[in-house]
Length: 165
Image 1 (tube, rainbow, N blue to C red):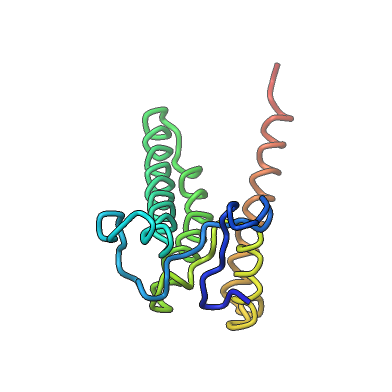
Image 2: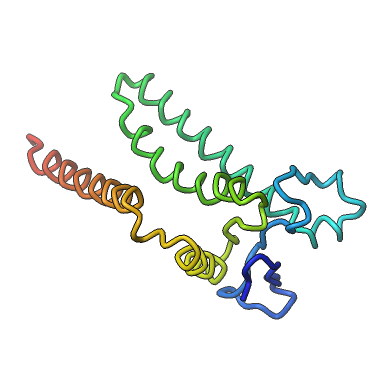
């Protein structure tokens, strides 16, 4: 069922675009950093989920740098930095799923797979093991993200509808 065991996710294995995934690192790796030069061969690195760590860590680094870029751009244009502050909510959610939760569980093998079916499987397993939907902080976070999106849309429509031509 994919719980704490590697899921064969490559397209060469017979998966399609929906079921294909980049699987998390092997449970034997734990939370250790697993660069390509630490493996005995490229095949071993690919089999043990090395690309997962490479992609996830570069993704997190990239989105954090993008927050800094938004902050700098707003500063140079004389704007207030609320766009970059708002972008920290989805970045925090991604960091929680890709970095904080696997470290808390003791292995990157518990991280969310990068793919459509793997993501849905992760959500179902996470709900079954932790009942996250009933946690009050999760409910507040979801309400905050969706509420912020609603208020941003209302503010944008109000500003654009009241422009003087």
